Image (cartoon, rainbow, N blue to C red; front, side, top):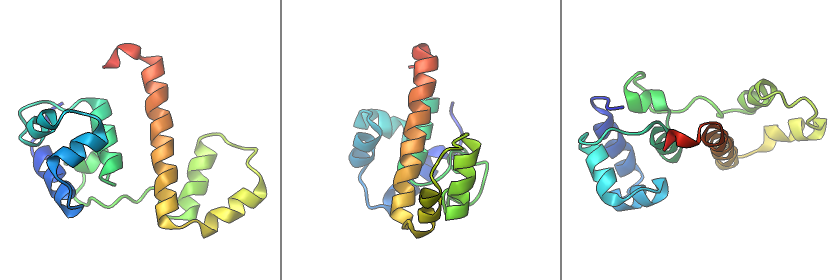
Length: 133
């Protein structure tokens, strides 16, 4: 997919983190020249790359695609959001003490949980559709 403006949004978020293009490419798991071409919008971005970029840059795929104006990520921003996600995942046997402990998780820990969930979803999609790459 090639969405106009996506390169500038990626560059802006990358620069906010004070990362070089090479550093972001390394975190995404792609070649630096590929990242350069993505930022210049010379190469279409693959779906799974978009997911990884959004996660690494702590934003949404909708923001990167230009569908929303704010790069802040509302999901995972509160214990209540996390409880809703756990419910939506169908995890019904989570011990009550864990649900209570969600109230004390720091934002950086919520970010780790978010990344783990996104990774599990990515793995599941890849397993279900191995020809995706």
